[in-house]
Image (cartoon, rainbow, N blue to C red; front, top):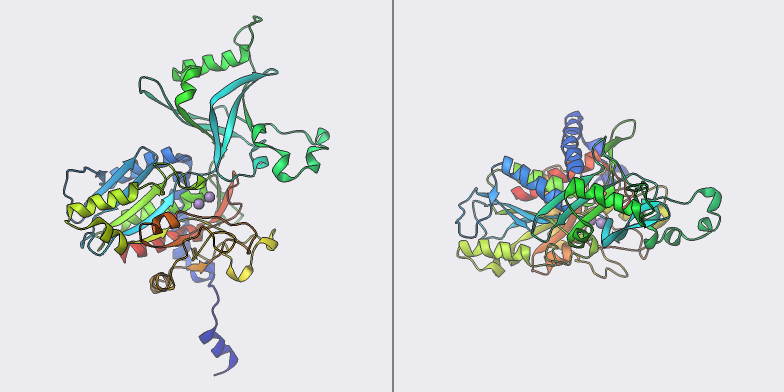
Length: 462
Ligand code: MN
Ligand code: MN
């Protein structure tokens, strides 16, 4: 055996998905990505993602979970948790007696929320005050077109759904930035300080209601438009969840159209493939769950986040119908925490350790652990479960790679994995590498999106 043969036998190198995939695979990835891009445009917020998931599920024969019903193998059900997180499930041939196959992805993304009392007038402008949600670089949110999404719930319980800034003829909004001519001081401050949280005020109007000298006339005009359009008054902002998101649509990136640029890939780029994989897994052996959860970007707290017991309650309720002990079922269950990882960026090599980073076009990324300062806050997947997933993906010829979240002590982060693990469920992070993660416009590779779908499908079938 010469050195070349010995190298092939002993050394590991991540295969490049682009090299591994034939023309049919690339065509399948491109076609899958079209569906994903439609989903991105239809579901920019967690509420919209749940609404869209329900529509897709019902078109595919799913019905809303009824606690009083007994579900035979093959039943397709969904549990809608307050319109902000959802569990879709197909009852397996074996039911839950050997545990469930769970994929959990999150459908909230970094954004700017309106404050409870958002609207004010200053120096000829009407503006909304915001409170940023999740980890953002604040300067990235200025001077780009923005849209307003969310709900306003009136005192009588009526819910008004708001979407402004998405259709071509809709007005958009913007956070203004300082012109370079007058930014001498701003340009010497750090990126963290150049635009502060209190500077993230959204421009929403500039014309007065009438020509009178009445104070706050521009604010009044804005309120009048909102009243005419949505039937709401200023007090109704007090019971609203309104989110400012980029007004961009998903689009192809690159001459070769190999990538997708969009707002909110993190984590719809895992949520959509997980949903599609669940729909496509006919008659699974084990009961499958696709959990699309909220609040990951702020630590998974709140009753719609995975630090809440809603997922374990659902599994325990299904177990009870089969006469099983819910806690034993949880202990036997396996989960892919489907979340993104940071793709290696040649512009910033100093924050990555190349041999343990994920790259675009090398397939879905398995992240054994996340965390910071020595794996703190991480659910470190076991070697046994890593081996199982490795074998599963290799046997099905799914393109995959390993990835850590950057160089040691460059920062760090977490996912829902530890909240799943807290129920004694076997779990590992599996997702898509993303460039410009958490920016208003993130980039992924179509081959990686499709590899995620294929990985999730194989897991549900297992
Ligand atoms: Mn994420
Ligand atoms: Mn994130």
